[in-house]
Image (cartoon, rainbow, N blue to C red; front, side, top):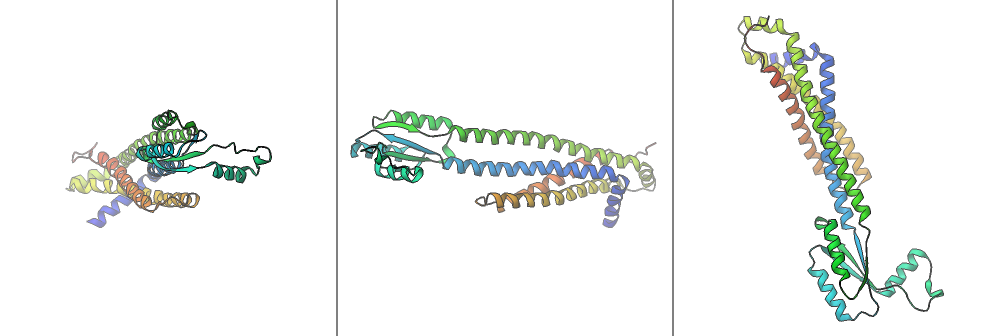
Length: 288
């Protein structure tokens, strides 16, 4: 009986080869975009965390700051929940860095070192947002030993907003294509059922059970989903491989396996739901 079900399911492909091909391709694209959305979430979260962890706030101090004031200032950093680490840069270190970066020695012109001592502050990525950074800047500027606070958050914010906008577009496209694929599986199954009305009437007349008529249609839908899964899995593997080559610091192995599971579930769900709702309209009543 199992062989009969599979044989009947395969016959349905021959009944509507073009419809089956379009359904498989559309399903593959819909699930592929959904899988890409998962990858995008993973990438954006990793890239966002890496960018946030590299935010460097430079706190420039006024001249001749007492050691006691610096100790109190460092206590503020240690107590602040968004500060991950900090580093003091004295005037001599600032001078060496300036010469290394510019290749110019201002001592040829000036007798004193004009560069101020400073603190470099690094933040906890999971707690970083624009409001918290602005609050921290405001608190720092209120300290009497602080001369200025400099950081470039605007560029990072634009990048993160761009990533969010791209994700939104892909989510909408994924939902629309998912709905179209579901409808195509349903329509293709209905078309096949219509083309085999005479065969189904004959099966009803000889007493074939309703399950034996419906199940090959549902099985055909699952086959559509399985073929789509194979196509999308190959594309996902190539995409993950490319991402790994471009961003070697990203660990995508666990995400790849998780994505395969999501792709399989989505493909089989599309095939099953679309064909099930088409097959459930079949009754034991003869169609004229």
